[in-house]
Length: 134
Length: 116
Image 1 (cartoon, chains in turn blue, red):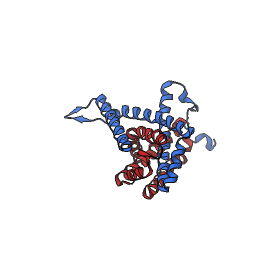
Image 2 (cartoon, each protein chain N blue to C red):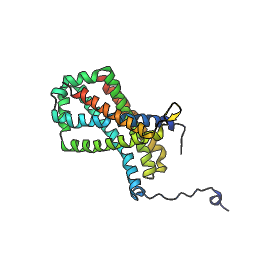
Image 3 (cartoon, each protein chain N blue to C red):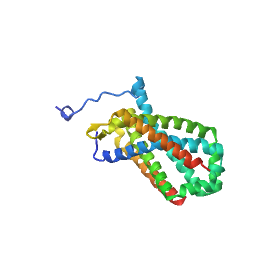
Image 4 (cartoon, rainbow over the protein chains, first blue to last red):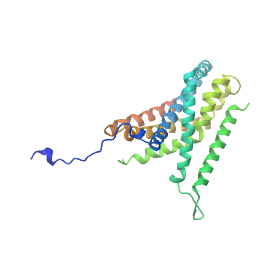
């Protein structure tokens, strides 16, 4: 009897590379996970914009010109779709992550989702006002 | 496979997810579409944007948004690679690469926001 026979091995069912293409639910799950690439990617673009501001007016103007390139516009269009999908799925999951109780009663999930959407809308309007006014 | 450090990364992931859910879509419309369309005049004139961004509160908020967005990406992308693409064998290198990138991005964001 060799050592190979006494060694403990656990069987691991092989997971096919494209398991998530098997059905719609799995595919949407992976899409939701991949929205994080655009959330992080956009944060990087925002940081580059801030760096151009730090480098002076010429650098800032050049960066705005870069943002006019088709590739930049396509990136932002896809990033916007991903970000909105992230917001919707994130707020929908919120009542499952947090059980809010008021006066010993659990606040209905629908109310938490509605409050989240209201906060999202209010903050979006506030940001647009702050940046675009005057 | 839960590790003792997981709650720490999960908290950064959740904070980033919440901040991004609230602010990122509006910011993409503003900096990705409105800014290039309007150009460096009016609302997006250099001096005006500089005043807006150099406000101490704005600096802190931008730093928080950018850094937490990086950590949100790092945590979610790590699990997508490991579970989704069956990269379980590469558990440690994937985690180090993802969180390391987020930490580097955070340091860079701090440097830029202190300089602007």
